Figure 1: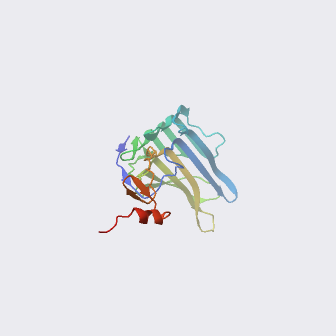
Figure 2: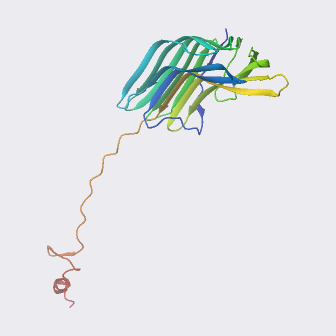
Figure 3: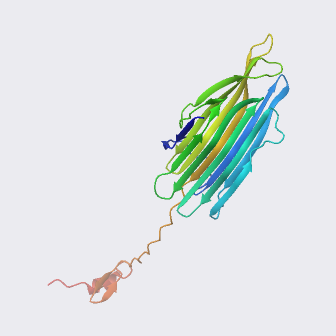
Length: 266
């Protein structure tokens, strides 16, 4: 098994999809796959396994030891464990993390993604640098070890599959890794897989059929707002006037008095 780890922080102008300062969330496995060939559905799977959202009033939301399974799926199987998803909102920082173990994902009977451990973690302090980190142990695509680098085009591979109605059918997968930070937030997605089916109908053109995406270990957070500044008391502004021998005269409203009190030139 190959071992690969990445902990670099990548600067980006992409804004994390977080609603408000201090928000944080994590997801373990997100599967959104569907494909139809010649009017027949050959792949369908829709599931989110492990989800945590930091409470609006502060604190931590955590879920642990979740079995990976996709009830009702067609052409897709998945096993493993979402070890933990956790998201925290604090006064001075927000953070989130996700961890998956012993993952095995197969599509149309073909092993697509296998991994011993996949993790994603982000931190968003009120003061300081946001961080986004991902790690992999034993990551394989179609049975071959792969290493993903953050914020690159990723790794693409294909495998022959059997699909009724398609000639020379192939399942294609591209794996990418995201470690993105901005001034206000951070996103870490350990593995984002995009799948397609290709093949041709007898006597017809080559088909390229989108199948969907799979996300493995995702964490997001946004920097909390700083404390509100203490308002500075304002001093009252005195009315315009002249003070002579302890007497204040408003020249605008009492010109006669001001004239009477003016010094007499010798």
